[in-house]
Image 1 (cartoon, rainbow, N blue to C red):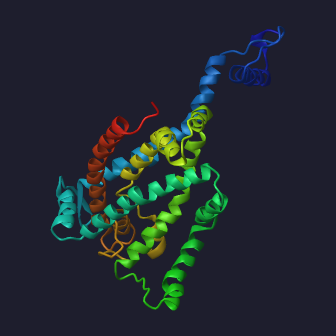
Image 2: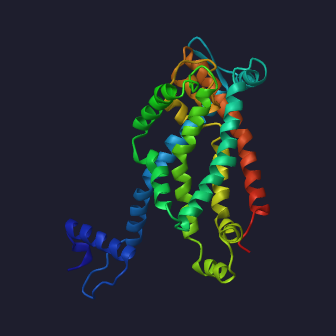
Image 3: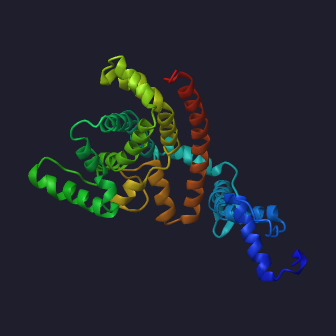
Length: 328
């Protein structure tokens, strides 16, 4: 049968057969007709395969961010939107340095970032090394640290709130945690470190499992102690992972608010003792009495802090890669 006289069904069948041969390999039998436009068919398949993630990126990342940039240069007078140039950025700067509306949020965000970087991350690396070496009770450590990720986050928040506000004060009368002083911030800070601990532990443990066995055996032949093995072999080998984690932490400096929202919700605008920049901007958008102007304020803050964080992130990455430990 000539190819031009193939039925529609046969053409479809040979099209997908040729696509399968192209993708998965294999050869046709001599009496099998070659499908037409097999390269075009493969291109069409790849096009539709990639279409959804590309559209998702364009709509939910590019589109949303372009809209945020536009809002940062917009002000509303009633229902009328007008070009504002740097007016919204001036509001953000004044809120930090003049009125002090964001001063506490900046302070708390800085404490949250430094605590995670200087305490949380080293502990994650050390515990990952303990689990990697399979020391006694390492399995117990894993279970306890993974517990917040196994349970529902909402259930876990309720349990911790009951413990902090009712359980511990009934046993220790001097122990008090309220929403009206700094104890509310530090309670959620510690809770957040515990909740995030397992994620970093898995990342570092995976990096350690990827270290060449030849390198580890060399350390054993040299009679290296566990401390020397960690410092001279393990840490340089996983340092690219550490760099990535630090970069992510810097990039998230102005956006972390999830645990504070889980504990306290969007409890009205205004300065609160557990304010962070991410939480403050989120509340302005989600629970505002003047949403249009608060949207523009939050958008200007997002653009301004992005312009601050982006070069810091790039410089930090360059310095860490240049002066950090290497496997050589």
